[in-house]
Amino acid sequence: MIYSDSLVTITDSEIIFNHYYYSTGKRKVVSLADIDTIAVKKPTIWNGRFRLHGTGSFKIWFPKDMGRPHRDRIFFAALRSQWVKIGFTVENADRVEAILKEKGLIK
Image (cartoon, rainbow, N blue to C red; front, top):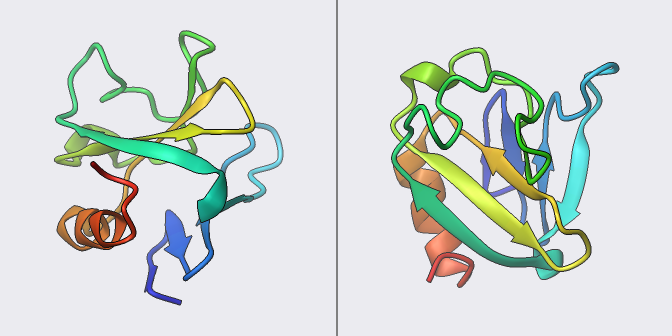
């Protein structure tokens, strides 16, 4: 394990999104090899700052994070295997951004 908090766990080969599925709260495991790119954006009303769980556009799915309105960054993972992106937040954005850059996922 490289990084873990209440929202995500990052290992050498995958990212685990806790509280991913809406009705069950189960987690989703995504292989790093299945991630095309990850974009990092400042949270705004237009890109999901107040989206606590689910989707508003059917293009981006947000795992549950009740603290998202107070986070300083939102990460958007584009996957190779599906057209829906994953918009996620973490508790230590500086650390996660450094890890994802090191892995070549943030360009």
